[in-house]
Length: 216
Image: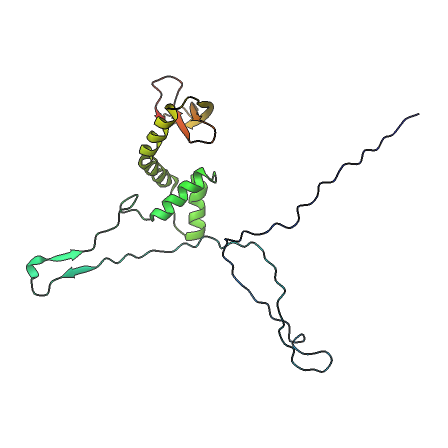
């Protein structure tokens, strides 16, 4: 005789509908009643709004690309023409004379490292959404420029890390495309150094030897 024992799995209590964050801006949309609902079905008199049935959904506004036009004042003295013309100075930019603003460059870096969106995809998205054809090489230049600007911060983080008594390390093999005509990827390495609940420093090396070129 076979004995069948049934075990009833305890069902987890459903947490219920999630509440949307209170700090998100609210855009109100009022839906009016139909023409039939605006008349009393009994006497035909106009009905009165006595309140609203309110519901909330999370929505998104897609990125909106626009052209920022900068107009710098040019001033001159009408009496002292020998003083020439003075033009308001240009603000400091990440890449001088670039076709895009600092906002586009920063957004590219965030998408690459926070959202893991490769540069070639971002190039395609920019062409699709804004009609601007900017190649991956240009995107790479943006990322390298921002990386160079952040090197002092990386150096400070490294010194703080080395001053501690505990460091965690991890090695990740990385395939690198080379332009030496071999048609094969080069085996490089990405080292990660950090401590729990503190900063993390990445060290990229073309090889395990000390001579390996690295980018932190």
